[in-house]
Amino acid sequence: MKKVLVLGAGQLARMMDLAGSPLNMDVKAFDVRTNKVVHPVAPEHIYGNLAEGIAEAEVITAEFEHVAHDILEQCEQSNKLKPTSQAIKIGGDRRLEKALLRECNVANAKHYVIETREDFEQALTELTLPIIFKSALEGYDGKGQWRMKSTEQADEIWQDMADFIAQANSSVPQGIVAEQMVPFDREVSLVGARNTHGEIEVYPLTENHHAGGILSVSVAAPVEQELQIQAASVFKALTEKLNYVGVLAIEFFQVGDQLLVNEIAPRVHNSGHWTQQGADTCQFENHLRAICGLPLGSTKLVRPTAMVNILGEDSVPNEALALPSLSIHWYDKEKRAGRKMGHLNLCGNDEQELAQRLNQLAAILPTEAFPDLASFAAKYQ
Ligand code: ATP
Ligand code: MG
Ligand code: MG
Image (cartoon, rainbow, N blue to C red; front, top):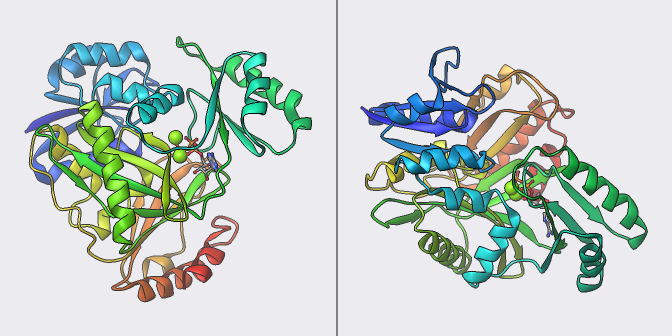
């Protein structure tokens, strides 16, 4: 049995474990909140502390990019960490991420790094409104972001950003990245894997819809070849630069036929959950294959698939489960407003059938919990 330790004990570690079992992999998770190594599916089973977890593991990986740097260093020293701590840190710091994009000559939104009020004022002259300000560290699900439409908001936003930074508990200096708002046509992401032998496989581009800064629906269907090639070349450039091993996700804004990188995630990604039912090999299995030096599995789209996040709900009507080609994945988390509690994967034999089923699903699910699904499904038809 190959022993894998995941830094982080959330749903991504859980789904890695579920995908790893048939491969005869023993996946354990390090819960950064309790400092204990636990079973990813049954966290009441505790196996010890981080040092013990590191000693036992053959490979160590991470399910999120905001891992404390001392933990990353400790893992790196064991020579078992994949991807490297450098890659994980880049994904967790928008300043490093932008520097990587520049080094690799990858198109992204015009931006400006801010540390002082003078920098802030300068950003307002360098960029044109609307501007989005993002905390360099610790941002996820749209948290730590401020949108400015008018310079009248300047004092208020500056104060809010200062408060956010003051509350952050980080040993790394905090900063803000000011970014030009991109008038995108749509948001897409590319999830792919690179293994220890440098082999790369990428999934088809996935279209993503956010509600309030949180991913709500992802759809994978056949994509325009030109766009796929553009995205795949960005994936190759970034992963080769980092000598990256594992699954990496790249979020893009599509403007016309051009892709601008929004951000990267050095891990399995929510916009890749559809692969559990819609691809030959799911992203969790491919991540494990990549970090364990195995050949990658095919990333081919088997059938058009939509993934719908279940936010803040711990049940859905049984009627939804009765829909053909619908799968549900619960994370066994305590219910909290807006929290990612699980997701639904819905497939169709073609896009038309998927659209039909999405509309059926939207009619079954409660509107309060899935406010945008009906309008999304209606447009998709
Ligand atoms: P995630 O949960 O994906 O890690 P995050 O908190 O890191 O989210 P971003 O992905 O940077 O945040 O931004 C969240 C969403 O806000 C984007 O998916 C997009 O819809 C919108 N957004 C972010 N930056 C821009 C921009 N420069 N122009 C237009 N929209 C943007
Ligand atoms: Mg992010
Ligand atoms: Mg994002």
